[in-house]
Amino acid sequence: MIKLSTKGRYGTRLMLNLALHYNNGGKPVIIENVSKDEEVSTRYLEQIVIPLRISNLVKSIRGAAGGYILSRHPSKIKLIEILESLEGPICLVDCVDESDYCHRTPTCAAHEIWKEASFMMREFFGKTTLQDLVKISNKKNP
Image (cartoon, rainbow, N blue to C red; front, side):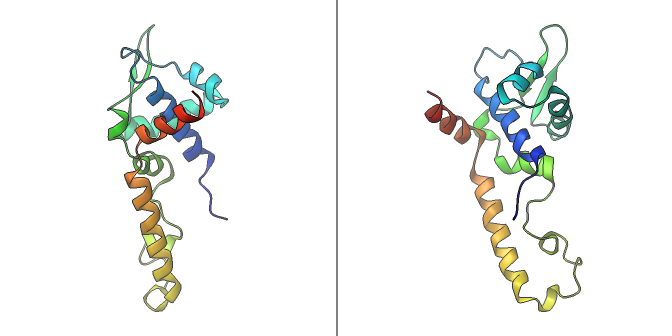
């Protein structure tokens, strides 16, 4: 079974939470509130937000009214940016991302299938934005 780690899943939920609050007058979202909303520990979210900040997907605001905000509009943040920030390159098998990983790659028929499937997955995540997730969330939670 191929799965995203909790880091990728919870990081996406964190980003969606920030996106849902994007138009609240620019007020930062406190990580403790995200923790309650998403039922994820504050400590884990604090770890997850670091690579998102390094990748310039979120900004941290210091001070009494501090917290986190998206670095740009949810329609401008692709899901692949979030996932690769947290998970690394998105591919089904290592030999797709690392061409010298396996000595059989040049003659491996399955390699071509993994490569194409990885391309399709990257393409899907590359065209899906946080705004798309906001729309889905609003339909499911009116």
